[in-house]
Image 1 (cartoon, rainbow, N blue to C red):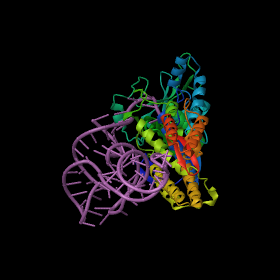
Image 2: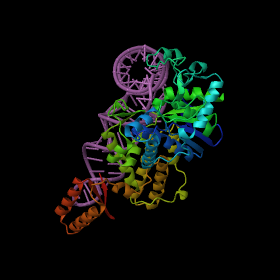
Image 3: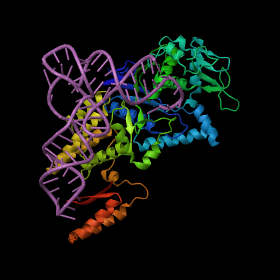
Image 4: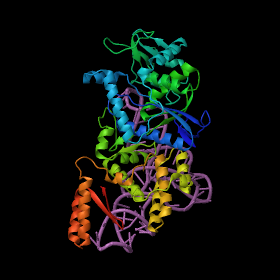
Length: 461
RNA sequence: GGCGCGGUGGCAGAGUGGUUAUGCAGCGGACUGCAACUCCGUGUACGCCGGUUCGAUUCCGACCCGCGCCUCCA
């Protein structure tokens, strides 16, 4: 299996530190607002990666953190007139709902920053005593970037360039402009924790270093996250962790690609981001997941109406192959050439787009068997399709449920069934004008009818 | 300015030194009361210019264009 490592900028043959086991950490979200599409991309990407690694027989310990204390959380809670903990409680709950709807399995562990203040303080303490951090005049504690010769190895930045750059926040209290906060002194009235350096709270980067090493050890296999975390967040994590533990931090760094919206960068500052729940009002959740999985996790994807509609059409085709076929029992279906082709694609840096092409080949095979009247073979192939789809977190619904799922305000299933019966009566009486009128009427309301020997089934457009 | 990624057919999106990606859409045929679904067939491709090679979309170099990070953001 080969995985692209951001640290070396190339695909490498993957070898776990401990045979058969994989320790993975992914930066989760800061819970001050609902999850947006960018979060969905990272969530789904690492969900597919975890599912595939497990499919390959690895015991995966997947840790994804929650940042539940930071400036944005305090600011938002203040605006809302609620406590920071009430805000984060609500947002964590919402995140779990969104995840579940996208078919994202929960991580093995989900540590929160505020539950690990002791570990964070212990790590800062180590950094100060080893000369990698210092307490500044303003009460903050900073990491001394110049004390770590490897600083910049992940993002390939040179310290002199960063220091010379105009965008670095120059603060009097810092020794070097590129130094970053490990501990922030509390302002009056702010929520805070006691520490050797006075009341305050952790900086953003330190929690990930403290929690990842706490949960997974000084050195672990994979660390992932969104594309914009590469610098400074992950660069800083490396500096903190390697200085504190004296060991290499992470073997393989993985970063998902960015999401664009109608060919424009999606970002907080542009205000053009969509939350997952907004998107799920317009499209079925599995269509959104299919859209995300149908391109490689590192590529940039463009969210647009056209692209989502196409994803829906394609997923519909796959479910059509499964409709009316009861898959054979998984245990009765030996590995096929499709399984091998699927794994060949996924072994190459999780090429889910290539893997989906295999799904289409299997669907085509089901349809051919059915056309040839070979139900037994169709059941076998259907089992393969469900098995491989499951590795991507797709095609696990009952096909009828997928076709019938509708939003509020759409025609009810009962009404549709009644109309189908009326049309069947008309057809029996050879009153095709009436039959077509009913079909057209339903079509106008977004319901498409499919006739077959067994009767008429329906789906929503 | 510094660092990095990419330009594939109408669209989406893989991949490869010589042989079909795949999907959506289109066209022709079969099936159907007519459709839908499905099946069969079919067209359109690798930004530009050089180089290496028997042969390059695939390797190398220059150029053009797009994008990302360098600032809170996944």
